[in-house]
Length: 87
Image 1 (cartoon, rainbow, N blue to C red):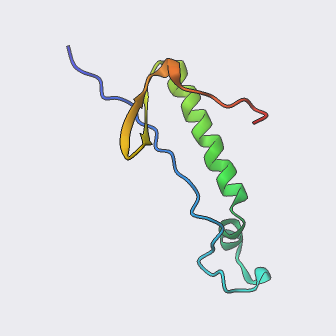
Image 2 (image 1 turned 90 degrees about the horizontal axis):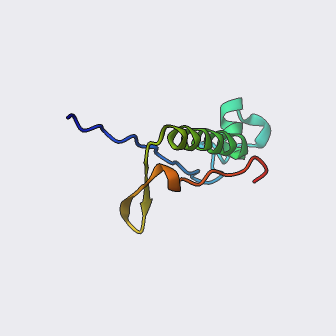
């Protein structure tokens, strides 16, 4: 019997609302710099992607790994918590 490799979801967080050109006047930002400066659309997109990945793992019965207290922690599929649409 061959052991299956576990599926892993990498959760990423924002590094704040800093742009690589934060010293520029707001109207001088190009669209990508503006998105990074505002942060909200990027953060929302990341959160959406994470929730979709969690749903897929839970449905498929695949565990995930999270970083907690300086260690990797395996979460069984049945213990994965999914946020409601309104949260």
